[in-house]
Amino acid sequence: MSVEKVPSRASSKDADASAGVGASEKQTVSVSDQLQQQGVDDRGIPQLTCVPSRSSAVDEAYHVAGEVALEYSKEEADAVRRKIDRRVPILLALVYFSQFLDKTLLNYAAVTGLPIKGNQYSIVASGFYFGFLAWVLPTASLAQRFPWGGPTVYLGLNVMAWGIVLACAAINPSFAPFFALRFLLGMLESCVTPVLISTVVAFYRTEEQALRIACFYACNGLTQIVGPLIAYAVTFYKGAAFGYQPWRLLYVVFGLFAFVLGAIVVIWLPASPSRARFLSEHERRVALERVRDNAAGTTQRKIKLHQLKEAAFGDIRIWVVFVFVVLTSIPNGGLSNFSSQIIKGFGYSSRETLLIGIPQGVLATIFTLLCAWLSDRYRERILPVFVALVPTIVGAAILVGLGKGGEHAEGTRRNTLVFAVYLTSTFGSSLSVVFAWNATNVAGYSKKISSSALMMFGFGAGNIAGSYIFQQKDAPDYIPGKTVVLVTLAAAAGTALVLRALVAKDNRRKKALIEEFKRERGWDDEEVKKQRDAIAFRDFTDKENPFFVYTS
Image 1 (cartoon, one colour):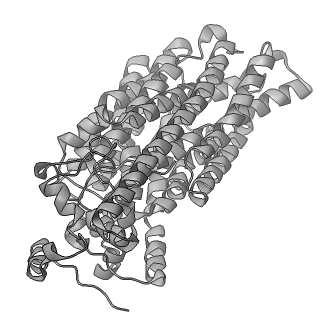
Image 2: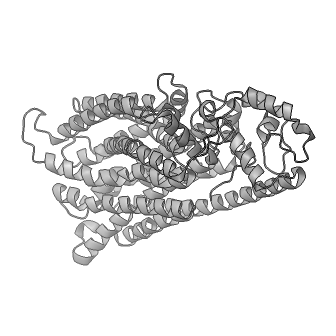
Image 3: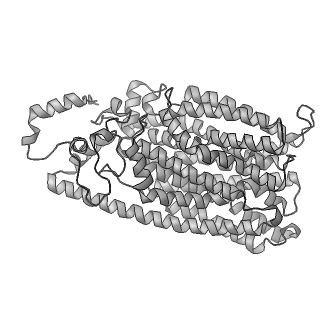
């Protein structure tokens, strides 16, 4: 098998000059050069052009992979992917498992003796999201620019820090200190999803991303299995070391786990293939070539203001995704903190509540992996969203219709209400698919990081609102809160349809532009691929890159 040597930019230009490219019948002047030197007409695609100053800083993969694609075999690519799979998704999943378990630990502490009750509990629950909201945009910038090892080292240090915060929560259960620690925990965990998604994009092809994102997002469901089991076990704790209060032991154990995990991430999780020391030099090159067709790059430390502007003002799709995330985060903020109380409101004891809640986690995990498989298998991001949303909408409707007087429910009615609570666990899978949509359809590192941060801002805002939909005055039925879950998720389904229509419209414009290039310049499909390869690691946005194709 031959391996092409990647020429430097200077040498390739000299070679073109000596060959007299300008006299050729077929116009093979690089689109990459045209974008940098003279721009391309706006053919119905907003902000297609860019100027030299915007792209003077290329993706770090460009310095390793250049503009000319390396020839490699399918066997080589599969071997490299398997080697990456043995490390990267596992560490990403452990981080997400830790952050979701730590975030929802309050839910289990509430039924194992935490003395904070009533509306103070709602305020403490929302404290996490206030911290999340306050820090999610700054932390995205810090992660991108972090000079010592890149975003994943920054992530690992944050994981270690929140482990310390969790352990400190066991010291004083009074309202003010607990709120402050929850606020700090939210700040530290706000970097997780943007960094995890950017890492998946750096290592995996478009058609591989949804399943890898689901591998860590499925930990939402896994924590709903492991968390209640551990909480159930500590209810039998009778030792004096933690003041005879089992909930304190929960915080210390999970804090220690997070601290150790953070240290492992700092040492062993690379931010991109070009930084992956567990790969050989040739394997790193193959890993980069695998993702060249994504046209989304890997990582880039320079923040490009024009990309931030495009994310904020030049791409309506990002704001549609933002609305979707807010609408799905409102029920998440309520159910993640109050699902145990809802089940307990059907007349179960604390220990029974913990065990009965476990199937929620099983169902959430199954749906997350199913939706991801459908998304990658059919290269379809939006339709699996409905697979996730519909069961929860049905479950919420049952809870609203049959939930009045639930504490007195018996037999079939009580079993039906519990089953309806189980159904409400599926909607979280839709966020996993939307995260994959963002990873696949947003290019330009600064734009991708900022759009992910904006999604997380919507996630925090929605969860803050959701923390207050289940009010103490509505206990134990919580009918108003359950109604909010029903209405917001129905609205989210409509938003997903709008997003799908916008993506289809953009793809029609892109296809028309490529066909016009081929007619005007005499390009065939091979030349189009060559031009697309040349531009892949130049850190252009999806709108600037005429070859970028969106996944609906």
